[in-house]
Amino acid sequence: MGKTFAEKVFSKKAGYEVSANDIVTVEPDWCMSHDNGAPIARIFKKIGVEKVKYPERICFILDHAVPAPSSDHAVNHKEVREFSKAQGIPNFYDVMSEGGVCHQKMVEEGYALPGLVMVGSDSHTCTYGAMGAFSTGIGRSEMAGTWATGHLWFKVPESMKVVVTGKFNPGVTAKDFILKFIGDVRADGADYMSVEFHGEGIENMSIAERMTLCNMGIEFGAKNAVCKPDQKVLDFIKANNNAKTDKWEAIWADEDATYAKEYHYDLADIKPGVAKPHKVDNYAPIDEVKGTEIHEAFLGSCTNGRLIDFQAAASILKGKHVKVRTVVIPASWKVYRQLMKEGLIDVFLDAGCVVCNPGCGPCMGNHEGILAPGEAAISTANRNFKGRMGDKESFIYLASPMTVAASALKGEIADPREAL
Image (tube, rainbow, N blue to C red; front, side, top):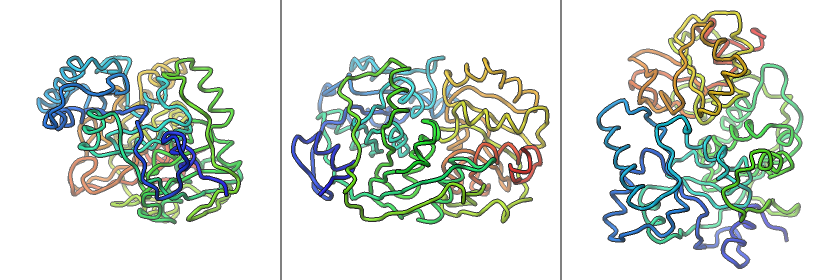
């Protein structure tokens, strides 16, 4: 009987054959932390171990509140810098023009590679599945323990197979598909499962679109989400020429693998949609929410802060002017420079948008566009929980870059197909 992706990856890492629900102890290839590296460092010091086991496997990327918007954030950043220096951690991305959102940087900088086991102290670490890695978020205590020992235990997850065929119609994107999927399976539909995306619909997607799908894996309970490391992934690795290790391997599930659940979708059936407040699985097709007043539009985040996302938004905004404050935040300085080269920064500025430095910004309510009581925002981010973007009495609608752009022009939730 064939094996799933998760079973094959953990068999390789453990050095013996494993199956779903087995317990294994392995050494993660990479351990990523962001601003929360400071509280993790405090936990690490309580363990009583003087030095981290593998400093070369740790990555620090400051991104959640950059530049520091408060003294508390500044202290956090200082502690990360001091810990990184004391431990001799070479992979540190400070508040400089080489940085960006952690999940974007892990892919850009060649850490995320096929067949690796990657952990991060952030729930959206599952993003790296777009590159064929087994990547998952872990807690702060788990991360501190992994720093100390170099290893971590896992229960090999059962797997879900999502088969996707067809192509998107104009005005419809990967974000629309994943929001619809989450609405169907619900927030706990894949609890502690390895979710594999299969089919020609996925093969036709770009790496950036696959990152959007995998990024949202945690929003329906997945332990990890992954796409096949096909020729597009191999070409991406070759073109970037910056792979941080040669231990990667293009691993994928066997044809006769056994799955706990299976779903099938045709992308031609997907329409623009949103996640209504205050849950990601509170899905609604665009026709049900059109005309809902908004006060802010946000384009960015680790979900939709890449070049193709801004190209899509700019195709709607070019030559027009927004009616509400619209915040644009590229996912990295590399993306920022791409926008500059293509003239998209000017498109956004001419449309009345505010363009900020790369980082997480208002996604978790730290700065650069948080909401006041009673205000509503439409956002390309991944969470719309109460208080996520500021005040607990505000409201967040999640949508694609095209839907956000179309809504910014009207000051109310709008159908992007009507704006094309």
